[in-house]
Amino acid sequence: MIYTLTLNPAIDLFIDTKAMQPNVVNRTENYEIQANGKGVNVSFILKRLGIENCALGIGGGFTLNYIEEVLNAARIKNEFVHVKAPTRINVFTHVQDENQEYKLVNKGPRADPEQIEALLTILRGLESTDILSLSGSFSEGIAPTILVEIAQIAQERRFKLVLDTSYQEVMETLMYHPYLIKPNDHELASWFGLTTIPKRDELIELGKTLVTKGAENVLISLGGEGALFMNHQQVFYGNAAKGTVVNTAGSGDTMLGTFLGGLITKKGAKENLRRALAAGSDTAFQSWITDFKRVPELEKQIQVKLIEEWGN
Image 1: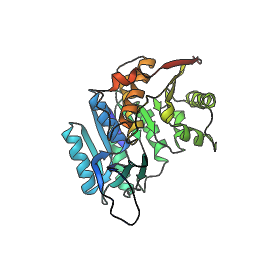
Image 2: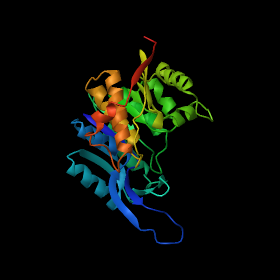
Image 3: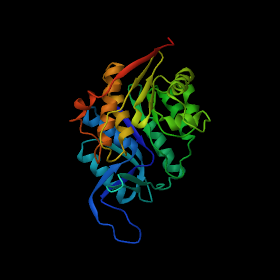
């Protein structure tokens, strides 16, 4: 079974408005309410690829109830540890006159030690045939050091661990050989103490360092510039598709979910990266995650190149 883990789920309110002016009532053109959280998004993507999975996490209140209802309606299994305060609501506003997107992201509710331990107990029940994909930020009360604890559990229980989170503690998980790590270029630079984003050749070397230190696979998101993928044998680069960006929330999650689905179904690296980039682009071009209908057409824009053969 594939499990996704969201330690700070959210309801995302997506607003489309012609203009945004201070001190007046701004009438919106359209809005959507979306059950969200990075791991939750990965669950939706896997389901749309026909891959059964279970969404795990921590949250609370009427907002978490809504997320659970949407997951249930999509026939995605889910198991959340409930806290007292409501799960957060984030606001993403697309302003047509400016062609700009404004993002307002809240912290999320506090989890206490007993609730965190309840979640870890669930993870200790995973088996060697399972995959756990952890994505996103953590609610208050959850220290980033939980990443190391989860990596230790993964090694002990022998299940595969996927990490898509910005915390520096990801570097401490490498000794436990995570199956896949998906940083973006900003996160990767931060992990290595760099204050500016390196050029592509330097990013490749940093990604290879993650592999050398223990990661089995590394997928580096470059935003509108595409992505890099590397494992112990090869390094690939693929460009992103071009189009009108509507909402970038969920684009990286889509790329991860699609790429993970390809790994599970044994797709070749080039084919897998091309489809993941096309799916991530399609999500950015609409208000919510891709339904994969336009992905084959977008794939035609994407060229995946073998950059280097190295390692084993």
